[in-house]
Picture 1 (cartoon, rainbow, N blue to C red):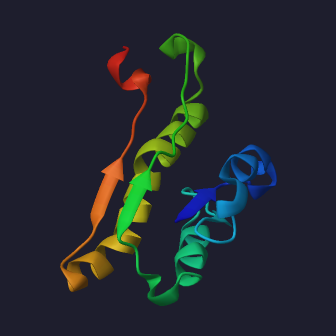
Picture 2: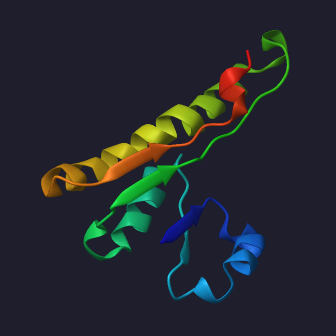
Length: 115
């Protein structure tokens, strides 16, 4: 199992929760869904780039009235929440199709239910 995060410097809680599994059955790697190079580097570090299951839960939220949000902040949100997933899928799907196997699971948050 490989857990990824944008900033592995903040992996302390995950490492503690993993306990003895860390380094045996769990690895923590750096991956920023907003950076194609980061995605490729992470996948290239996996033997054969073989991914059986991709679970994507990368996401950011935005609260407050639309007129109070900058266009740049909204673009950043879409870059992470939508285009980040697209980047990941584009990298793992060709191998999954070639093998005729694999699963992609996308996890959202409660914000998907709130307007």
